[in-house]
Amino acid sequence: MNYKDNLNLEKLPAHIAIIMDGNGRWAKQKGFLRAAGHKEGTTAVRDVVEGCAEIGIKNLTLYAFSTENWNRPKLEVDTLMKLLVSSLKKEIKTLQENDIKLNSIGNISNLPKKARKELQDVIDKTANNKRMTLTLALSYGSREEITNCITQIAEKVKSEELSIDAVDESVINEHLYTRNLPDVDLLIRTSGEQRISNFLLWQIAYAELYFTKILWPDYRREDLFEAIYNYQNRERRFGKTSEQLS
Ligand code: FPP
Image 1 (cartoon, rainbow, N blue to C red):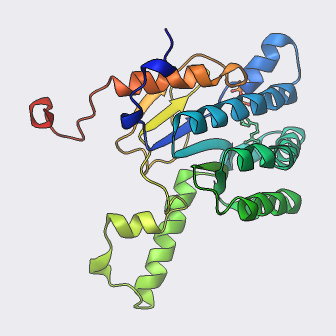
Image 2 (tube, rainbow, N blue to C red):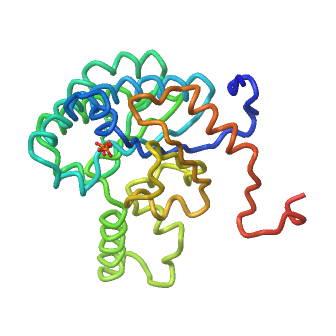
């Protein structure tokens, strides 16, 4: 089935988030080093980003490096950081051509200086792009984000900049790394694992979850169109009954 031609472009998810999993297993299956899986993963990143821009997705967030990933062997962490720098250098052209703005979420101060600088450079250069926002979750952990949010709000209450009665869901949203993004509508995880792994816990409250066995390096835009088609054929009730919706 050609999923792209069967999509309802009026009902696209406003925000898609992806847990790109399976790079290591892909490499192992082929007898390669894990690094080769991550490198091939960047090809999938490019294809999926272009696919999103092509059909009119406004927000795409990719889980590129979690706070827990710092515990991997140093060689693998270094490889991922180098890949990030080289991809940013190489892909700025793709971002500009497709009018895509780069954004990041996570505790960026933990990244090596070179990666931070390259990231900031691409964020600055693409700041006025309008077609889509691509957010990279880097050194990101949802619990860290929520802790950081609570600390900031507590400081403001303490200094009387904010009244405790004024703290509501919108105030919390404004203190998360995702403050400028809409809630996630569709969360995809590749490689067959069915876990959230500390990703966007607050933001996926009403997201549709979609799991596929495809390993990330093999994932392509047609697979994403299939996930969106599946999403569009679900009934999202947001706590209401089917009768109330119709
Ligand atoms: C999970 O696979 C993937 C990662 C930890 C890193 C994701 C990074 C990329 C796709 C490449 C760089 C990205 C950008 C945006 C430049 P895994 O290693 O956990 O796989 P496994 O579970 O099979 O071992």
